[in-house]
Length: 408
Ligand SMILES: *Cc1c(COP(=O)(O)O)cnc(C)c1O
Picture 1 (cartoon, rainbow, N blue to C red):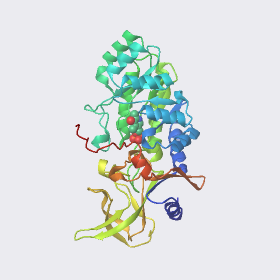
Picture 2: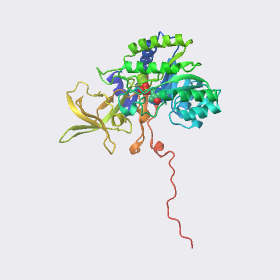
Picture 3: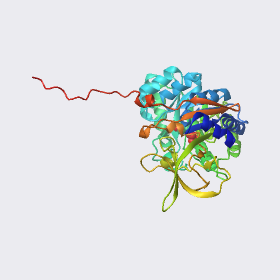
Picture 4: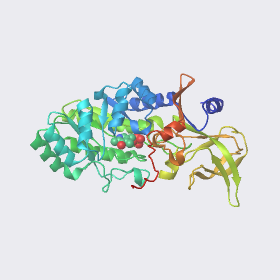
C-alpha cells in the first residue's frame, strides 16, 4: 500500500486505526501451501487468536484455510464466519472439561493437552476422536514468554508420559486420530523445528488410527529489512520429505497440518497513529501519539521492535526519537529510533501490526479500541467501528449508593 492510500485511510476513518492488506495475507497463505506442495494432504488452520476480526476469518475461508481455536468463543466466531465445525480444531490450554465438551458436541476436532482431561474425556466420550498435544521439550522461541515447548512449560503432555497416555487410551478405548505440537513462536532455526518433528514422528508410531499430524506453528517473520525469518521454502522441502517417508512406513497417507497465526497476518497489518506532541527534554525527543499500550501492547509485553515510519514526511531529515503513548504510566513503543523528522499532526505507521495487536487491545485509561480497515481489491473497507462512550459504559451497573435511612 502507498503512503497516500494509508494517509487517506487515517483521514477517512480517523486515528488511531488498524489497516490490513488482504493481498499480503493471500500471498503468505500461498507461500506456505506451495512450500508443502509435494505432500498430498496439507491443512492450514489459521490461529484465530492472532487477529480475530470476522472479516479476516471469512478471508481465510476463501483461501481454503481451517481454523485453530483456543476458546469456545473463538469456535463460535469461526462458526459465525461460516466455517463448518469439522474445519475447526480446538486447542485450548487449561480450560474446563465442560468447555471441551461444548466444542466436541458442536463437531470440532478436539486437541487435549493434559492427562487429567484426557482420561475424563475418554471415559465419558470414547467414541469422539481426539488429538493429543505433545510437549517434545525442545527449547525454541524468541522470548521466554512465548517459548512453550521446554521442560518447564505448561503446554502439552510430556513425551516422557507416553506410557501413561497409552494406558489411558487402552483403558477408555478412546480413539486418537491426531498428534500435535506447538513449540512456541519465533523459531529462528529450522533444524530445531525438524528435530522436534522427529520426536513427533517417534510419538506418532504409538498410535495406529491417526488421520493427521499437526506441527503447530512458530514461524518467524521479519520485523525490519534484513531480519532473520524462517526459511519456509527450505523447511517445507525438508519436512515434506520426512513426512512422506513417515506415511509410507506408517502405511497410510496422513494429513500434514499447521496452525500459523503470525506468519499469515503479521506483515499484512499496519497501525496508524497521529503525533499529538513533540516534546524535547534534556535527554531525548519524545514523539507522543494518540495511542498507547492499550492498543498495541507487544513492545511493552514482549519487547517487540515494530518498525515505525513517518508516512507524513517520508523524505524528511532523519532524527532520533523516543516514540511513546498517552497512557499514564511508562508506555514506550521505541527508544532512540531513527525516524524522518516528526511534526505534530504527522501520521506514524507501525509495521507488523497484523498479529497480536488489535486482538490484545484493551480499554485501559477508558479509551476506545480503534477501528479496523481491510484493504481489499484496492479499496478500504471498514471491518470494525471505533468504539464509543456507550461501549465503555456497556455492562457497567450503576447502583444506588445513597446512605440508607435510619429506621425509626
Ligand atoms: C498461538 C498459537 C498458534 C499460532 O502461533 P504463531 O506464532 O502466531 O504462528 C498456533 N497454535 C497454537 C496452539 C497456539 O496457541
